Image 1: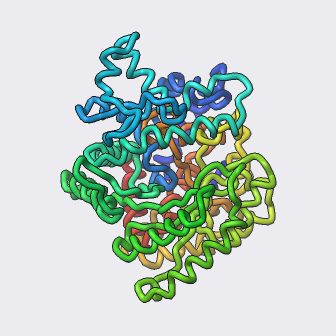
Image 2: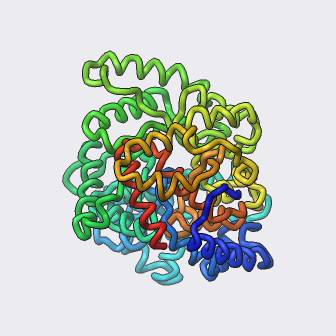
Image 3: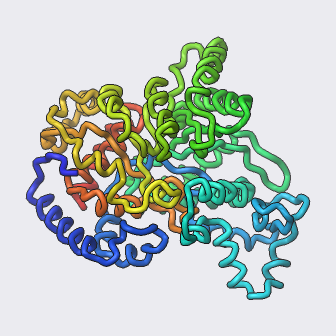
Length: 492
């Protein structure tokens, strides 16, 4: 993608370096984007291009899930708590899961670890693999359905441990600095927000959210001048294959929490495997009826409708990809994955007209069986051909921010250098990095996009900016984030 920018002399120098480093990695045999990420992980870690990617400010991480965002080694470390329990039952999906709540088939993990035939190190390695998709990625002839069948149970294996309050607090204590160091200044996390527990009680969902915000404020207070700009919010999710009452309860929760935390609730989504799942067409009347009923409540009557940010098109089967059509018709503000968007050219101008951004997660798409070679990723192919000639002043989203920014820095340092805006707005996200066996950073997905999609420096700049502009945060917050991003970009 070659977004048309007037680069500064400094940017032209970095652009030359970027192209040189891309050329080196494009000549590797095999090319890191050609095979499953899991087999190329060490090659990427050694890449000078990857180290360059790690350094630039990336803006927003708009698509990641709660339990799976952290490096799975985190759960191994937490399993050394004296109250940790390990599942030894016959249920294949739960075997090897960990928790801090006593129950059938759970024994103290220390008993298993200390008597493991291969020793403690071998046990911890087996535990790590049990929390990732790694054991199945190198098997021949794996299909997307097979990989999803192995992927979804991992949430149950770590979910109860994640919900244990001391683990939960440590999780976010580590996550905020990790993302900050990776160039992320805005994190939006999808979650069902199940109430956390300790050894004495289970807490409400509002209390659970407040625990996260407390960790955020503690971290910010360590360096308020720099970190106060960091933004965290959540997208409440329902499971698309769940019973109706569970999904309507999730939407009700989103409204309830937004009344208490208006700046923290970004919207609502339906998640899960699309291929066998209930379609958006199935859910549309249910969601609309639920919203209509909710808005009869005086507490929500005057509040705006809940933004939808639907997973859609995370499939290579055209009938399933029709969820994309229904997502747009339901006025989704963002599309999670959007892998099948290339099959629906009639939607392309609507994405621009309705200011809809696609949250692309290239590594996730590859490891869940949608694509083999990232150079053939449909989002990348569309980006390479999508720049078209309308000035930025015709972009409602960008124009809105320019009017609010009284400093006019955005106008003079960014917007006046934009000759063209891509007709396809995309952000880069990492989805479930822990389950891929990697750390909780977005740089790996950015590296894949830069190399496989042949992104120029102008394109990188555009994608990073779009992740802020289309994030759904308040206008003032987006201006603040964009001004901060522009300063970090110049320093980089």
